[in-house]
Length: 496
Image (cartoon, rainbow, N blue to C red; front, side):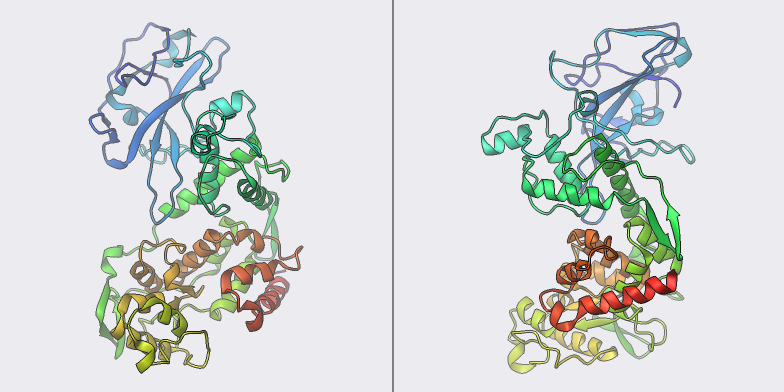
C-alpha cells in the first residue's frame, strides 16, 4: 500500500500523534471500517481492537516511511487459539480512525513517536502477520512482523525470565516488560510443543518446549516422491532454548502456516449438509448416524494430500505413510461397503465402561468391561453393530468410546483432533480421508509427538517414543513401535 498512515486522536487515550508531519497534500477521508462503539471491525466481529504499535523504515531522506499497526485478538476455528496478532492497516481497514497522506508529498517526519512514558516500550506487536481482507483481489503476501521493542533492544527471552504477568502471579520482580513470556508460551502451545499454563515465567518446561521447536526447525530438506527437496529456512540458529530473533522469525512462519491450514475449507460441500442424526437412518440397507448429501464422493486421501501434509508438518512422506499403514491399514473407510461407506472404527469396551454411568457391563460385557481386552473385537462392519448397540444405552459416550478413520483417533480426543464436539469429529470422518488425516495430525501435534516423527532415521527410540504417546501404555505389548519401524523401512526403500 502506497502512503503513510497517520492515526489521529480518535483512539482517545491510546496514542500521542506524531509531533509533526509536513505535507503539501490535503487529507483524504476513508470509508468507515471500524465500529468504535464496541471495538470491532465491521464484518469481522471476532477481531477486537487492543491497542497499536509503530514501525519505522527508511529514516534516510528523501522519503522516510511511517507505518502504524493495530493489535487484534482473533479466535481461530476449532480449538486453536494463537493470542494477539498484529496486522498492517490497509485503506479500508483504517476507515474513519485516521487519514492517509500522499507519500510523494511527505517532506519529513520529526518529533517523538507514540510513547507516553520516556522509558516505556511501545505496545506489543506480535507475530504472525494475518492480513484483514480489504476488498483487494489477491493482495500481496505480508512479511513476518516482530515486536519492535524486542528487535530494537536485541532482547532474547531466556531461561529465568519473568514478565509482568508472571511477576504479578508469583510475587517476583519482572525483568522483561509486557507479557512477552506469556505470548511466547501461547505460541508454543498453539504449535503443539508446550502443554500447561501460560504463566509468564520462562522455566524448565518452557525451555524444553522451545528446544523442541528449534530442533524441529533445524532441517534443511524434506523427502517428497523419493527426491530430496531443498527448502529455504529462515531459522539458521542452534538449539539453545533461547527465543532469539531467528527463533521468533521461524515461529512466526509456523504460526502463519498453522493459521492458514486451520482456515482452509475441508470440503467443497457446506458442513450444514452433513448432519449428525440419532436414531440412525438407512443408506443401502446400512445404518448411518450422519446424513450424506446425494452424489457426494467420499474421497480417498491422495498422494498429493499426503505429500502436502508431510511438508506442512515437517516430516518425511515415508513417516506419514508408515503411520497411516499401521494405524488404519491404509484406509479410513470400510471399502467392502458400497457408497456411501462408513468410516472404519473400533469400539473399545473398556472406554465405554469408563464413559457411561449406565449398568451396561451387567447385560452386555462385550460393550462395557472394566479393563482392556481384545476378545470382543469383531472387526469391519461388525464394529458398527457394536457401536450402534452401545448407543442404545448412551449415545454420546458410545461415540467417545470408538476410534475413527485413518488415524483411529478416539472419540473422547475430539478436542485434540481439532473439533468442538465428538459429533463434529464423526461428521468430518464421514466426509473423506483427508479430514480423517487432519484429525490424526492434529492429535499428534496436540500431544507434542511431531518431534518424534521428525527423527526416526537418527533416533532408534523415535518410534517407541511416538507409539507410547499415540497408542498408550499397551504399545509395547502390541508391538506398535516395531510395526511402525518396519513400515517406515519399507516406505523409505520404496520412495527412495
